[in-house]
Image (cartoon, rainbow, N blue to C red):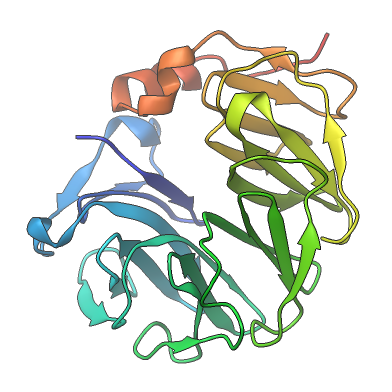
Length: 254
């Protein structure tokens, strides 16, 4: 089973794939014990994203179905009425989802969804929230919004096929096809970074003072140079590979 997304909270980790949700609690060896939560119809499509906000886990799949849970054990199906959702974020008191129908927003924890005006012609792969700003993107276009309602398009500076976005340390960081990484402090002006790879990068996260991008596996704390950590199979995100990665507990540039 391919796992498409992972979300971390203070107490638990969650992963989603075909809406079979796995949960682990933080114990002495937290990533080695998983509990399968499979209340959701697996024929409803592969799950692409999961996030947490306002006391709720929310996951989405390709067919436009959401599932929500306050505890990771009991899940409720929510139908958005839209299809092919690729990513979700939470900020400014709401959930925001992106996909082939543009941008959707929910103010009631995923129960009802509305399309953000002027976004339906965008096909979007990724979204992140930081410092009071949503940033979404795909292809060679970024969109930014302070409230999830009004969106402003920006050129990506040549970036092709945006796949993942995160925010950390005062920067939005975007990854994409052929080793693309670009950064921005404000979602408007973007700087392309030299990664030294042509491997597709699928996702990026920030923690412990550094950004880590996966496809092939790369990391860098300050953008002076990205280092290949060698686990090109990690893009499949099988649990055995995650445990292998976890054994490399400290990453340093240089």
